[in-house]
Length: 200
Image (cartoon, rainbow, N blue to C red; front, side, top):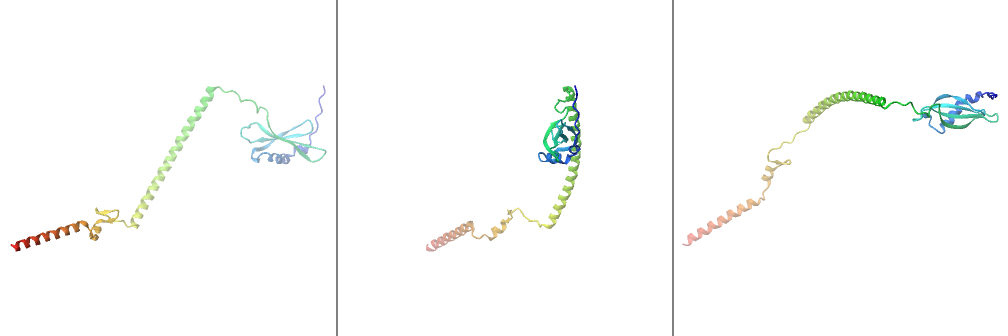
């Protein structure tokens, strides 16, 4: 059984990275395309250029751009696709549950220690900030006390109104009218008594 002689690979296809990247950027953001990862020569003379992928969830996969020379013209793109590399579709090695649980607990303990140290640092910063803010508040209060005059009230004030002044200015007091009428009635009665005495 004879093997097929290997066809020579066109150097223009191996170096067509700019063409391959331009084709990739038409279907995926440039941030998802990694560096070049070699090439594969196909049986029909085409070359598949591979690039690492930066897509999340696709470890071991490669962006693959197949390029070829048709009718002695310049290289052209035949196909662009995302293909798995060797072992990308295999499950990872099995790890016993006890081992995974121990690793998880160790990670949780380390995270708790880090959180405690961060909280202590934050508390110290907050205490320092509180002290500074208290000093500023006291300074502001002192300044406001000096600048703004305080209203003076005494026991007879109600909502800033001096009740004593109201009493002094109020002349139409019904109680005063009643007292005046009582005085007049007393005068009338005394006049009547005087007239009765004179008639006898």
